[in-house]
Length: 224
Figure: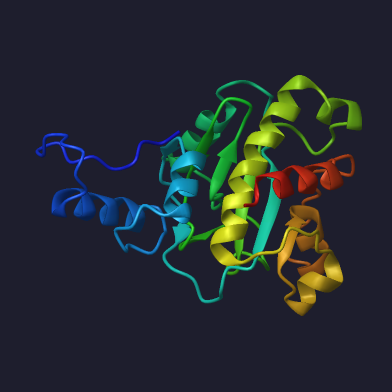
């Protein structure tokens, strides 16, 4: 869990004073939240879902559309405890591709690479209105692969993160396919569906065996 903001020069006295309020606003602004200085449900959700921030090299500042879509990806990287960190460092490094995701998730952690109010380059056609969630693993995984202990732990960690995003932007917990994407219907989708809808990429992740129904049920569990 990411710690809520602290003011190093102010002794801890249990009082939410001007110094703590200023630090809270700065933390909220840095994480794409309304900087109102109030540690409410959205701020706590963001703090609970964020472990570390590693800024991707390639992304777009700001957005031209309202956020109404969450796009599920796989990283095409091995299921290891530090996959999220390694991919985030790759997005941030000197040889970074012209690609990024808002969040990288593995069984151990969540790493944010692009602020939610900025545009990640993750799914052409849904970049401006979408938040990209990249998961450890491969699009070729079988249903059995998605059912192992690593994947189930990762999916539950991801579901908690996505529940917070859904609450922040009023996104309903439902799958949206090609037709809904074209119509601008809000919801949760896959990189493959975005590729089919807008014909701007050919990616098929997270794969035909991704347990979408089970995943959406997990997200529902975390929506307050």
